[in-house]
Image 1 (cartoon, rainbow, N blue to C red):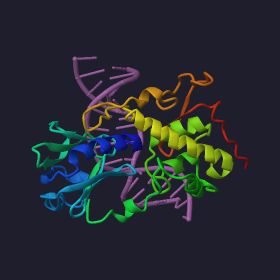
Image 2: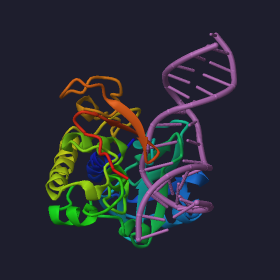
Image 3: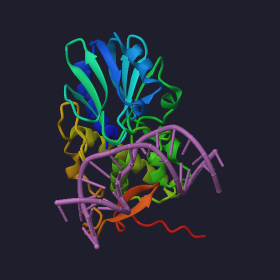
Image 4: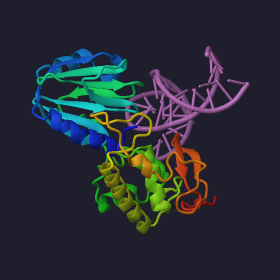
Length: 268
DNA sequence: ATCTATTCCTGGCTGC
DNA sequence: TGCAGCCAGGAATAGA
């Protein structure tokens, strides 16, 4: 499941192949994965040249000579060159003869053409990997919302997903259910540092391959080997040997150490 | 303004 | 071996 480090890995690699290339022909084979009509996307992309490939949160943004192509990988989306599988939902033939394919088993991914960065994407929170301490504090401090929900909210911070949220909260020693306004400013500052370091480290390791994530070259990441709580329910905490617990928060499986991340008791 | 639940989607896994 | 039933969750949407 691609989150910020996985998308960053993909974007860095794609950029080397795509920058300066021209899209000869685009095809959208699955209506569900396109935002707006597939035919319009195909028309807008035909002949477009790619000037830049960048990441905006978890979105992949190709800046074209006219307009932008946005790709969101959802849960199982992949971008691969010259492979054919039964889950290819869109294809982009390039002027070097190669074809970039968007494959997505579960069709949670999206492809979109837009003249400018769409408003709902442009207004997302600051990038989780580069947000400064002051802005991080401004976004989170004083909020009554549970810290896990806040970290997952792309309007608060863009780029975090379920895996890195659980890992960050473990590293910061914060229980996922803690309302943000219960955290001291020092604890929030520590969380900021943890988030930045965690994402940088994960990018260095080319992301986490949990189920079937691979980058544009088909290579897996290795950061899953460094997860301390995600996917480790029932196994001993790597710090204190207490079994890692799994609960549901924000409708997502949430992993934490009940000893290292103390339960916050809210009195009535 | 906030927060929660539901929906989409299907391969893979569990258990009978 | 087969199959029903459940699980994974990003983000839009509806509802409280």
